[in-house]
Length: 99
Image (tube, rainbow, N blue to C red):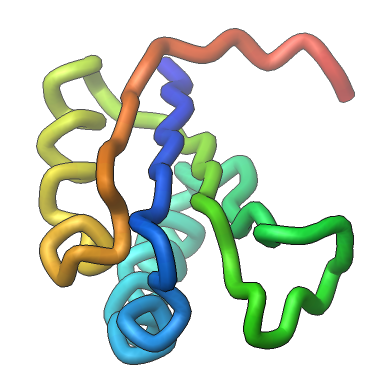
């Protein structure tokens, strides 16, 4: 089943995010290689695709996992959460309707 993983950044997370990004992306690439990643990306903190020093307010991942527990366990090991980029992470079942 698909699950949405929504991480909400702490204030002024940009440097910590940049530091943890290689490990975070590595895990996403692994999901993609397994054919389980539907989409992933950050939420800019301002209305711009390149927010510069404003940074990001969070991230959204939609991926396939065997269960809600498996999705939550995966999210709990995210480098952004472990390094303090994320203040919170919410994992919910997700039904893809479009495209």
